[in-house]
Amino acid sequence: MRFWSSVLLVGLLRFARPAGAARNKHHGRYLKRNGRTNSNRSGRKLQKLDFTEDVEFWTRFLQESIPSIPMKTSRPTLLLTRSPTRQPISNTTSRPTIEPIRNPTLQPSNEPTRLPTRFPTTEPSNDPTRGLTRSPTLQPSNEPTSVPTRQPSNSPKSPPTSQPTPQPSSNPTSFPTFAPTDSPTPALLPPTFEPSNNPTRLPIPFPTQQPTSEPTVSPTPLPSNSPTLKPTNNPTQQPSLTPTRFPTSPPTASPSSSPTFPCNLTPEQRAEDIRELMATVTNDSLFDDPTTPQAQALNWVTNEDAIEPTLCPDRKMLQRYVLAAFYFATEGDSWDQCSAPAEFDDPDAVAAANANCNRVVTPFQVNNDRVGDTSTDAWLTPVNECEWGGIACWGQDTPNLEFHIDQLDFENDGLAGTLISEIGALDSLRFLILEQGNITGTIPSTYGDLERLLILDMDFNQITGTMPEEIYGLSSLQQLDLNDNRITGTISPSIGDLNLLTFYQIDHNFIVGTIPTEMGELEQLRIAFLSVNDLTGTMPAEVCANRNNTIPPGNLGVLVSDCSGDPPEVVCSCCSSCAPV
Image (cartoon, rainbow, N blue to C red):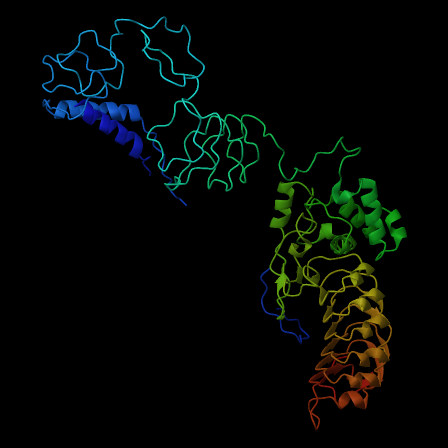
């Protein structure tokens, strides 16, 4: 029974393995606008085997399951029996024991026993040593000591082997060896797939040639000699012995002498730079009078604009400034819709202002993406200006113009005040529509800088002065609609330069003089309203040659002048109709 228990114990220790687990008007429109709409990998947990409990269990199991059967062994037992046999062995030994036993057997044993007898010899050695010897004797003593030692010797009985053993030992040694072997033992078994639950008590003197696949479950009590490739989930209890390969960004040696500011500019520097930028489109002297629209706009973009992040002096801010100046110049606080909130940084005030804005731009059919063409946020609210009502911007498919103003569109919204020259800085503008308002003053000559402008429509206002000569330099212009204003002056011969013009409406003004022959150069012109002015003379034959009832027919389908009365102010034999006197 004891033999099989011993065999089971050795097997468990040696072979155990961890377990795993539109709009329209009375006189008509050329451009028709339609309606508006403003792994899990479940990892296996390691199971820590308690070999002691396993051995005890299986020992008890064998003791309870296997009946005790007397057996005769072919060789002597490894351990002494607790009591002598009742009968002497039947066979006699061939040689006597080295030392006589106290009570000799009747016949000598075949070989001496491997372990000393339970009782000392009749004649003990002179005296046992009082303490353990530091090293074993080269030769065993002739006689055993009277009392066996209770502690193992301090050192092994022989020096360590220079080469590893072919097979690993069944049980680890009680104490580590004092020096490593000359070469590592060959790996007879593959490494485990999961790290051990507990780290080793002490780090190994040198790092392994390859890192482990995964970090240990918990940090080691002592730091490793070099950092791991991956950080641990939890900080180590002690600092590492060597620094990391790359230092972290070091903190400043002392606090900065001054706080940081938006745009890396002090408020004074930022205000100065903003004024300098805005002075590129505005007469700087206007900033000194706080009642001017330009001064109010400068103050707003510098100190009151609540958009985040704070804007820096650049092209984006310049566009926002121009629109703010337009707002203040056209008395934006008195608009019927989309006026600015009472408090720019008050969410409730902003929400109330947005609720009173339903203005969307006229939906012209354009070939590019647009931004804000259906947005209806109030003006000067803390969003991108493209989102303000009555504005549309170029979209993302035009990278050089993205978020630049494409359309400024207000009709019958109570606009008053004057037109500002700064609008000419919006060189991306294609549609400028400010109809049916109370705008006074003159048309700024800077509008001639709007080289992309397709439509200039400011009818039914109170605009005075003459037509700026610069307007005739807008080579892309297709619609010039200024009827029902107070415009004076003459029709410039330069009108012939607008070779893409299709719609020309200047009726109900105070324009004088004769109709220039250069107007006959407008081969694309389809509609022309020239009536209710102070024009005189005869309609040039060059203009009549473009009528659509000629041979060959031209494009001019509608031509209206003051050709009624006797005598008529304008003699026109080719006009489609004459305004009544």
